[in-house]
Length: 421
Ligand SMILES: [Zn+2]
Image (cartoon, rainbow, N blue to C red):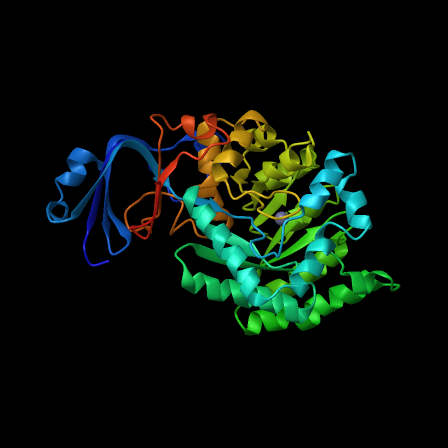
């Protein structure tokens, strides 16, 4: 952008200033400016503050003007856990779950993740791309400007590399930032399940065949493992993540969702960027997270969609001082939503987080979980001008109105990429 942009008419501007991960009481500090303004230059924030101070900048005089009419503006959501690329919904399983089958029973019968693997391997690249692009448009229309995206529905070298390559291509085609994670160790694929030591064999393939290729082609920044009952053991996760680190991929973990495997403590030992899920953690896991730099990423969409009432202990994590982040876990099996506002509503009513805590967890702490906190997640000078505007009078109304989309406008690098009709 060569023309500067001056945004005014912001009744509440939630700056989230501070550029660092939030813990404890700091999680509710939104850095609110009333009657705020933001000046954007070359896609980055050049000035931020009250309308009076920002309008006084000499550059503001000749800037293009955008008055958002007294709405609330804040940093675009950073959704730090998604499974963006998949071939189809699993609505047929949704009905089985409602009738009483558990997620694990469905998985044992070849449903669940393996069902998505079958569908992905059979899908064309065009179909996958179309579905992902449509989802990205929906993310933007709900105020999200950066997402993490994992592979993990391929589970063979070619399919996993195809997913990550597609993510790289899509990143160039549309405005949202996509941060890639290699999740070759999502579950053990069908073809290894009949064999003795099948899980060990597949673990070796992930380490010796997939990881070197992912690193050589620069296809991912992070390496993730689903360490749980029915997926990978703590020992296998440790081997994979250690090897990932050797290839320059930072670890993150699906930890303690279905059972307590001590994956969280492993994540902390390995310096993982985040441990995600955490429904089954105990007090020693909470202490470990609180004393670490590892983000505790909570995904309440899963429990909601599965009809469980076993949400992660958000209050205990926050009160102990852990870095709590929120994400959608957008995926076809357990959390088919792109809506961060809905996740905020769940965080407030089910996790007992305050609206301010939920917003910080979904912006600056999400950015931290992706190691992007210096660039996105708050509205501060020199950061990327990623903002979203909601049709509300008070920021607490963002989670308060649930099941409808109040996002009015989204800007990425200072460009309007979504505007409500
Ligand atoms: Zn996940």
